[in-house]
Image (tube, rainbow, N blue to C red):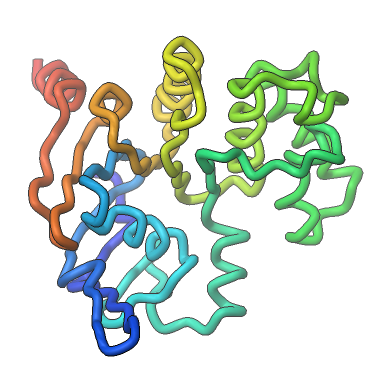
Length: 240
């Protein structure tokens, strides 16, 4: 049995807006193990973006406990959370968040630069990751010279640079056409087969269908948590 990687214990997140208190997450408990591929779904206002921010240590819960790789991150200060993000989490965003003035290779190296890795070590690792996502021939190009799908591949490679415990993807196909979206999801499928733990937030059923497990949020609570069709097929195959 793979060990538990993520544990949310009665996590709540409330925002004070003037005289109004908005509860974005309401007593959410969730457990995710190493090597799982989980999609988080829900309508606008369901709490999925807030959950992503909490899971990614971009925001702290108002109450409850969050353990990441056995480390309680729910009470950490901003500096400690920043260190956890840099060492334990890889992010893939809908808008890519690449630096347009530098090359593909330099963009992939950014997390390693902030971790203090010397350039002689950064360069070969980033080059290998560019090859992994199919951009070995575009390493010296800048993001503005790439298609949307290629830019998202750079973002995926950058997310892998720090060898994270967890990959978080926020609507990773939101800015892509249907064919390119499929190519990016096939890349995530390959990472899953390689043993990566992936949590993606999406509102698209076909994207969520690539995951093994689907968690649906409603009004800040977990409305359902079940295996996807793919997960059911994999579970059945494992039993035969």
